[in-house]
Every structure is written in structure tokens, then in C-alpha cells.
Amino acid sequence: MGQYDRLILMAEDELTQYSTDARKIEKLRQKIGLSVSANEQKQVKEQLLAEMPTDPIRKIIEDQRQTVALPFWGIAGLGLLFGISMSQPLDFVATIAGGAIAFQIQKLGWRLQAKRLVLKTLEDIEERVRKPD
Image 1 (tube, rainbow, N blue to C red):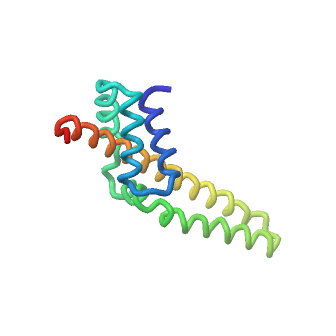
Image 2: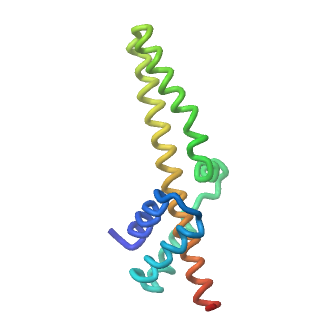
Image 3: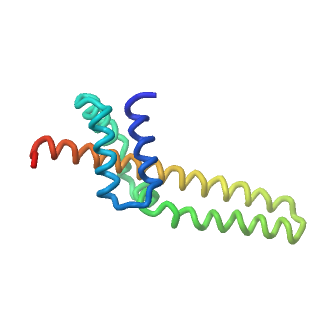
């Protein structure tokens, strides 16, 4: 696992904590500062800048992943309800498809949010190096 993947995993770990973005950046900044060299930080930042979404759909998924996935969770629930109540095994396809799509949307949004957190943290580190307190 390279530095890029390690940093994304560290950011995903920070996203699980209930705190402000500033606190998440502060905690992640300390971890990155201890474990990643300046050259590797620049490489990761360049890679992140190249990968960050520019299309509006992926930006919406990044910002509102749960809202975007909600209709697909509803489709999965309705498929399950109709499949059980009407004894229609074909309706279970909607359950599987809706659940899979909703899960993938949430997974993509989570990953994009973690990348954005790493990018903000790397920019914060660069700013602190340029302008020490």
C-alpha cells in the first residue's frame, strides 16, 4: 500500500469521528507530518488534484451522498415489501439492485470526502510551512 492509499485510509478513519472539519484536519495534519515526507506530500497532492471531481454529479455525491442514495434505498425497500407481500420473486431484483446502487453511491461519496479531507490537510500543511506562526 502506497502513501496515497494510506493517507486516504487515515482520512476515512478521521471521518468516522464526530468532530468539526478543523479538528479532523488538525488531527490528520499531525499524522501526515510524522509519517510522510514533503516530497511524498507533493506527489499525493498532485495526484489528488488530478482525481478530484469536476463534474456536477460527482460533486453532489461528495457533498450529499446520503441524500443521493436515499431514493435507491427506497427502491430496495419497496422491492422487498412487494416481493414479500405479493409473493413476487422478481421484485427481489429491485431490492438487490437498489441496495447495490445505494451502497456504491455512499461508498463513492465517502471516498471522495476522504480525498477532499486529505487535500485540505495537505494545503493546510503547505500554508503553515510558508507562514509559520
